[in-house]
Length: 195
Length: 201
Image 1 (cartoon, each protein chain N blue to C red):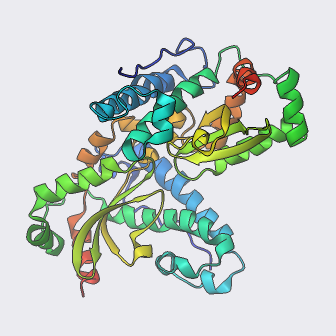
Image 2 (tube, each protein chain N blue to C red):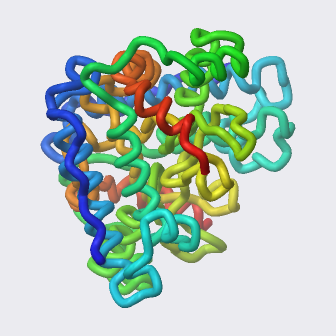
Image 3 (cartoon, chains in turn cyan, orange):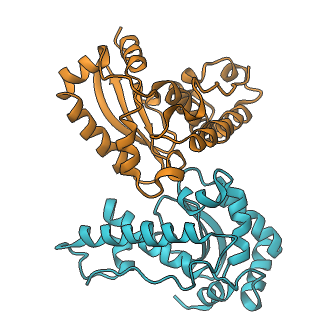
């Protein structure tokens, strides 16, 4: 069955001024859609035609992997964002972040450095491993922590198309603004899930 | 001596409407400047490296100490690639001269060059460059990820297109193929001819 472009889980103006309507129109309506369409073309008549997106990511390579992972990454990224987001995590997630990174501010600092330092195009992630231990990482282009057996909890898209309309070359300013729209409920749900 | 940002050899709006003035301004004044600053930071205090031209530094990447090699590859690559890029851009220069003759002879002509170069530029996933290079006297089309330079592979670039989104996003957004199509209107074949002649001497 063909993969579908999911609707954004918020209105396209919900994240302004941190992420503009124009950015979301292109990012979701053009970039994300193109990954979905390209993936569907690539998998037609192949072993991946009826596979789940996750299976396709874990078992494919090259163009199929790139497009499948970008479909997943973008859907996950939208879910990490909310017009009523921002603030701080609470509960077990907050405790785990404090335990691993020292404090929420230190976590933010380390995550921002990883996001700013990812050279070229890619993604910054908060992940947990099989034992529940948290870590921060970044991946190149379409790459996804799942293929290393890690569970994504939060991501920030640092491809230039994610922020160029709003922030031009100033990626750190985009990452600063990103904190205002993080959907910590979604992150906490990912943290609580057993895998 | 520290590297410095070269001036653009023309006004920001010189390539309009193919590449817009705002893009040129940010691309040169912000992106290129950041590469210059960061490669200078990376090699600071290493007199042997600081004495090299940026081309020699990147061609000799393997001899750069491991601890700073990635920073030199990325930011030094960004400096050498952008320094190369600006002078090969100019509007209204006809396809002709020694590089054009070699393209006719070795690649089957402008249309075939355009087709293959476009495929390389649009097919490079993520950030990177597409190139026409001279390798052992022969023309080749290739692409590199991020700021990797053909110089590191011993190849001499004579045409290059910056395929990073920052090179085209303000004007072309998601439409990289439209930017690549426009690029063929601003290749400075006089400069490319000089580079070809120097590379095949």
